[in-house]
Each structure stands twice: as C-alpha cells, then as structure tokens.
Image 1 (cartoon, helix red, strand yellow):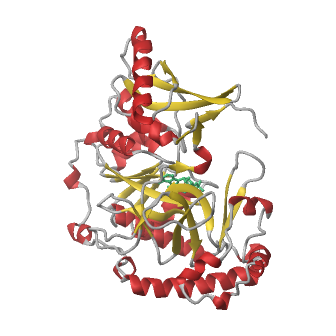
Image 2 (tube, rainbow, N blue to C red):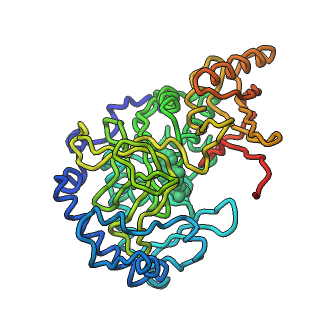
Image 3 (tube, protein in one colour):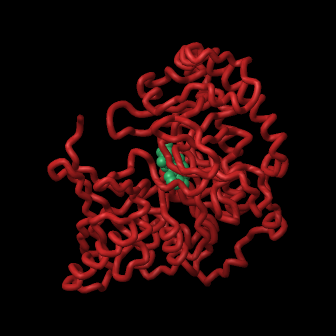
Length: 449
Ligand code: DLL
C-alpha cells in the first residue's frame, strides 16, 4: 500500500472548521449555565431523595429537602458520597431505578472485596454518548474519521464509552479493545485511523511494538490520541507525541459518575473542560472536607446533574487536581480541571514527603538511557517506608553502565523531588507492559493496621 499523507485522509475541510459540536451548550454564558445547573441540581436531589434510601437518610440527617436549594452555594449543605457506599450497597442499592428499567451495567473490579457496580437507563446511555461525542469533537475528532478504539471493552467503561461516543459523532469505529498489539498496528495502518483511543501507557506499548517491527507510526494517518483512565505526566505526553506522531489529548472520567467524557481537553490543551451542564465540580481539602478556593489543589468532588439511574451527590473522587474558570482561548465557557496529578490512594509518604507516582514519572521520562517504563516498589523497613524505583534501560545500552545510570537517576530524583530512593536499572522489556491501566506502584507493605 502506498504511503498516505495526513492531508489525504477523507475528512471534509468544512467539518474541521466547526469548532463546537454543541455550540449552545459549550459556549453557554456562565449565568445561564448556573441557572441550568440549579434547576438540574434540584431535580437530581429530588431523584436521590425519592428513590435512594441512603441518600434520603443522609439528606434528612443534614436537614436538607430537595426544595430547600435556593442557590448553587447550597450544594455545600449536601452530604458527600464515597466509593464504599457503592460497595456497601452492592449491587444495586444506590440505584434510583429498579434493575429492570436499566439498559446497562458496568463494574470495576476493586482490588479488595466486592466490585463497584454502576447502572444506566437508556437516557443515561444517550447522554453519555452525547458527552463522549462532544469530548471527541473537542479533542479534534470529526465525523467520518476512523477511530481506533483500544480501550478495553467489557465491564470497564472505556471501551463502550468511547465506542458509543464515536458512533454518535458519526465517526467510523474500530472496536479493537486492548491486546494483540501487532494486530492493532496493522489495522491502524490498513484502516487509516486518524484517532487513537487508549490509555497513555498502552499507547506507549503500541509505539514500542511498532518500532520493534520497523513500522513508523509517525508517518501513519494518526493525528489525534485521546488518552486517559490513568494519571500521566506532561513528559509522558511529549514522549507519546514524539513516538506516535500525533497530538495527545487528555480525557477524564470515572465509572461512578458516568465513564470517560466527564471532562476533556480542547485544542488549547491547558486543562480539561468539565461538562458543567451535566456535572458540578468542586475541590475540597481531603482532610477537613471543606471546599477550597478556586485554583487550590485538593480532592475533586463531582455531583451529577442529569443521571437517572445513579444520581451522585458530592461524590469524592479521590483524584487530586485544581479547577479554573478563567476563560479559555477556545471560547468554551465550561470550567477546566487541571491535569490530575494522582489519586489520594496512590500518594506515597516517603520520609514525610508526599509524592505521587506521576511526579517520579515526570523526572524519569527524558533521562538519557532510560526507557519510559517504570514501577515503584514500596516496602516497610522498620517503621519507615522505603521506595525503590525499577526502571528500564533503553535498548542498546550496555549492562555495565546500568549501575552508573541508576546512581545518576537517584541523584536527579533527590534534587528534583527531595526524596532518597534506590534505583534499579533493568534490561529492556523487563517491566510488564500494560494493555489498559498501568500498574505503577507495587506495594509490598504489610496490609492491615
Ligand atoms: O477510567 C474511565 C475512563 C476511560 C476515563 C477512558 C478516560 C478514558 P474508572 O475505571 O472508573 O473509569 O477509573 C476512574 O481513573 O478516578 C482517575 O483516578 C483515573 N483517571 C481517569 N482519567 C484520568 C486522567 C475510567 N485523564 C479513575 N488522568 C479516576 C488521570 C485519570 N487519571
């Protein structure tokens, strides 16, 4: 097959010019947006109060009735919801609709105990498809594009979420799922995909396999990647863009709230627009639970505004980020969530210093002789946590130099983040590659109190 230039891929120039998929919603003046949010918040609280006993009991305890909400500031009177609420009421106890009225269930396999189950009515699926289409469009995908979807299909929301959104956009979906990386590469080339949907770690695994096969994906039809489902650093973005020759766009979501498409970057790539006509976003201090002023880093809390089956009141995501409502050059009026630096659960406290894996990633990527694959191994030595970092040498780097590289990396981490770590440099290919969410931390500390 002859080489195709990116300009030859069949997308109408006219449709490229359409910046917004839903201009009225995406550029809604903020006062109108606030009025819409308040009306929808009242409906959501009513739905939760009338149909979910746990919400009703908590709202009663907080002395809040659905009709009491006078302004959006009253949001702070609502009780929080946490992940364990879903587990404690497994499988359907937090649903506001009986199971037979649902169209779909998804679930995430928790590391401990019962999975978290989420449900959707037909209308919820429809809204999700709209928001995912909006996100894809916001990232630069257009009607007629071939969208290669390497998010896992099944109970994980990534695969079907991106699938329905791409179909709603009018794109041509390749429902690939994760795995069979060689085949993925062949199909990206043969079907001339313009858009790749994958976790950032799997995108890198695709790049690596392509390079080993002698396939230059940088010269392929790929132009845009929608990467999310796990934290990734700006350095990782650069690495992926260099090796895949595309524009890497950050997309965020979580199954408890909907799935992918809760927020997405636009062409400015300076934070992810959170779709405020369907969700309310807050950032709180994770210890005190108090709302933080805009711009301060804390735990992201999300309230759904249109979900029927699983209304969520002030859901504590455990994701750490900041919000800004400063105007964006793209013209969208929706707030931006800045890059998620990590999850509260992933935060390591190393000799008193709080560290997220993504901070270490940002330091590792781009170091000479080091490949962008790593794992942090946490162990307990006496009463102290000890972190060792396993990294891989780039192919072709001689084994004799591993120790010197390790020394250099440890020194660099110490100077950039301020923590002392043991670094172990291993041969290329040693660290397991992900086909979905990468496992960055191996926690070998004893479990329990
Ligand atoms: O990961 C949904 C998704 C699929 C998002 C595909 C984006 C793309 P869960 O499996 O429920 O849902 O995991 C949600 O993943 O709370 C974050 O900790 C993390 N996460 C998701 N997107 C990002 C992102 C999907 N862009 C959890 N950056 C969330 C950092 C992310 N972390």
